[in-house]
Structures are given as C-alpha cells and as structure tokens.
Amino acid sequence: MKDEVLTTNRPMTVEEYIEFEERSEIRHEFINGNLIPMPSTTLFHNDICINLVILLRSLLTKGDYKIQQENVKVQISTEKDYTYPDVVVTGDSRDF
Image (cartoon, rainbow, N blue to C red; front, side, top):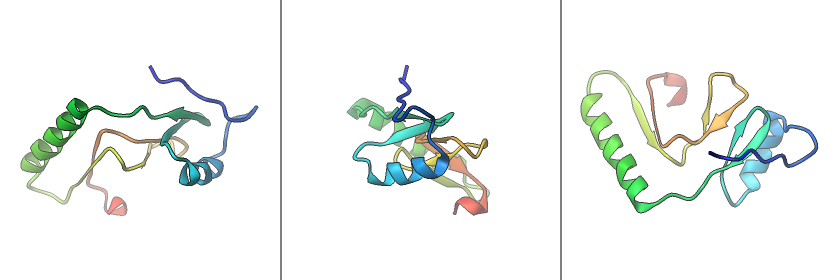
C-alpha cells in the first residue's frame, strides 16, 4: 500500500500540488490533500500495460476514445484528487 506523505503541517491545496508536481523529480498522486509518491515500475508491469492498451485499442473501434498509459496525470471526479493510472480510457471530448 502506498504511504501518504505530508509535506507540511497541513494538507496541500490543489494549486500547491500542481506547482509542486511541476518541479518534482518524481511523480506523486494527490489524495485528500496529501502527496503519495509513485513507485518505480518493472518491465513486467510495463508489458502488462502495453498489452492492455493494445487490447483496448482493438476492442474500442466504434466511438471516439482516447487511451493513455501511465505518465498521464488524471483528475478524479472529486476534482480535488489526481492520480497516474496505469491505463486510462476516456470518451470525453474535454480530455482530447
């Protein structure tokens, strides 16, 4: 399980997180105002993600979908939390 890291004596705001993440050498998820360092990946993990992307591309031939892998920061529906999912699929034109 990932450990939350408090960088100050109070949770960060979304704006502080965005600014911090732009300068950081490592990626962090941002959940409930706290930073969660993202662990490095393995070759096996990367192979699984690539296979998922290939499979999803072959299955999602109808419709306008965007498929991204790992290095894309995603704002979760709470509009306060951000994460870096292994694979993300969106059909929302705002994401294009």
